Image 1 (tube, helix red, strand yellow):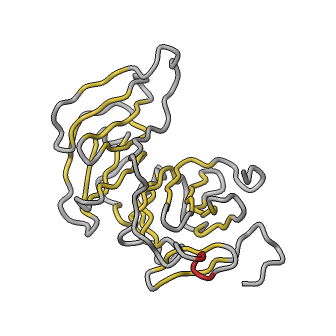
Image 2: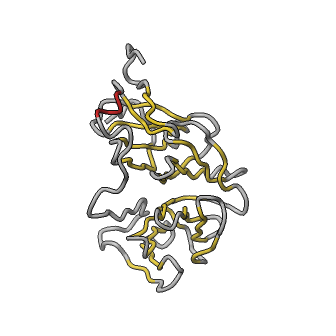
Length: 231
């Protein structure tokens, strides 16, 4: 799907309620959205990104978080789901931010840092930053299970590691005897789709092509792959 429009898609985040897939492309240095039916695609943010890596979605506050491991200015950024209001969220005491995950009920964004060799969390209001577990080796992907345990992949030892959200009960394991190379992403799936109804949930928000939830209601987006679209 969209193989001619994408170069190196890495992190993805899904808005189940609006039926959109957000992606980050590390070669094109862009964040974009694709409808789940595979029809339409739009680049939402393609300025200010250097080495974007992972995405995490905050459906309650309609925000996307992304990691950018730009060697000189690594950071975690935050942008609205419609691509507006891009800003630095974390730019201090950060090395090589890789995997991201959001703990919705705790209102925490968490990430693994291959430079600082840490698993960290911070509240989405920017307070309460904490080191959950250290030292790590070369963490890459990150997920959580029911806001109880973190799981992350590691490029150095090729294992999956896990610890509680409070940094307790650490253990690691090899995912498969057939897996001998680098392990990339890791994902924990819920039994049911998560996410509240949005203005885009019904009749695509009245949009002809792409509907994304903005801060003040539905935003109709003109796709990049429909050249004669009237938006």
